Image 1: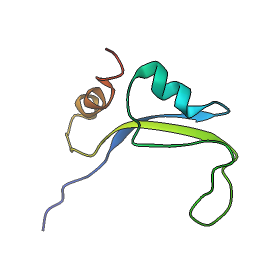
Image 2 (image 1 turned 90 degrees about the horizontal axis):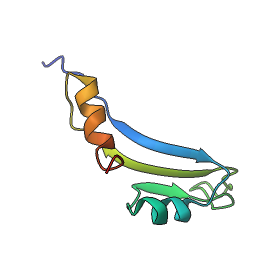
Image 3 (image 1 turned 90 degrees about the vertical axis):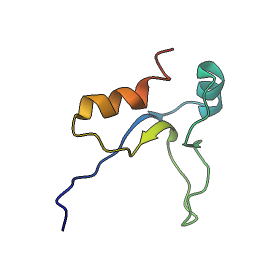
Image 4 (image 1 turned 180 degrees about the vertical axis):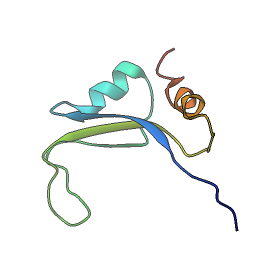
Length: 76
C-alpha cells in the first residue's frame, strides 16, 4: 500500500463580475466559470460569479513547484 499524498492547485476569482470579461482580458480558457444567476446542478442559482483556471493535479512533493505550474500561463 502506498502512502502517497495527493493535492491540486488552481487559480480562482469569485465575486460580482462578468467571467467572460476575465476570459477576454486574459485570453485564457477557464476550466470552470459561471455568472450570477446561472443554475447549479440542483436547480438553485449562483449568487456569485466564478472563474477558475489552471487546475493542476500533477502531484509534486514541493507545493511551490506545483503552484508555479498552475500560474505560469497567468504571468505571461
